[in-house]
Length: 418
Image (tube, rainbow, N blue to C red):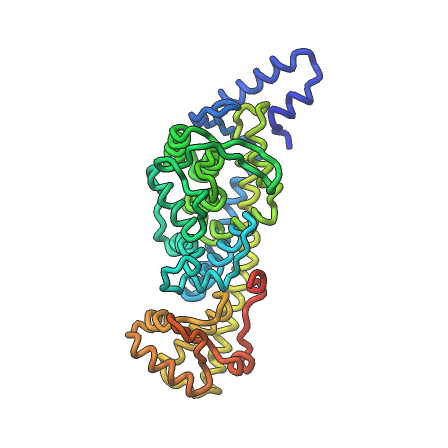
């Protein structure tokens, strides 16, 4: 790479004037016509983002790849596309937890979403999953105030937070906290007192709304600022990654923004390296390399998503043939019964779990729940459907015999973290 960190420029300079040369290079970068000065002062200096040719090329790659991701998703029918997005949400929650060393499973996430209990153990992960589901459905709203950031945090940590880690300030924490990478190394100490945290959150939100800064860069710069402030005692990572996905949703496709935690988990060293670049006082607050590392992670997420969507897209056409075969060989004369079977086939193939609730079936058929139950009972009598979950919400899936007879099986990316 031709464009180097200021710290590297300094250490590569063996002249007696390297301090002055570093100051000159910093000034050149800050004052360049292509540089964005972000107006937030850190201990290393005012944050700024230069856009060298390497970042321009990477940005073009990311935006071009997004067209392929969107085309693949749009090429699927609505039910299959929604099932894929639902599966991505399950994964995103599992992986964002795993980054923090918290074990969870897709089944836990699904059960939490379907639970009507107020018991803390049943609520665990539910609000976090609902937040990501809102991104998938297009219902998510970005916070506009520090109070809004706190409200999101409360949902992320619902059922998770112990009394010792509850924020003790008006909105955020009162005391200091260390930012630890990999559970061992302290790479930064969060801002204090609370007034500085609130100022940082206000700056973060203003940065996200800055129309003078490309929204893709603004989202990533805002992610840095959130983690720099580290406004809470616990849960900063999960809250920060959710906010990052939410802000990236302006510029990137839903499959991409719902796939970031997997990539971060698999490339944690690269993720922490991005933060260390800005923390290095020799780099004078330059965010360029942070943004490039994060863009590289986005690109990796895109390539994973394309593999997943391509597999799903090909499998979708195969399912139509399997459905035609099932209609011929099974007593499925009623359109409603055919619709339920095709729905369950797609849930089994794309949706992580092959069962659907009575309400989901009713919504899909555009009928009442009583009518949906009648059609489901008919499919049970024919040995096509079976009750999977006996307690509320009651769910139904395809029988094992039906799945084996017609070759209905999940696509290969379903297996991890059951």
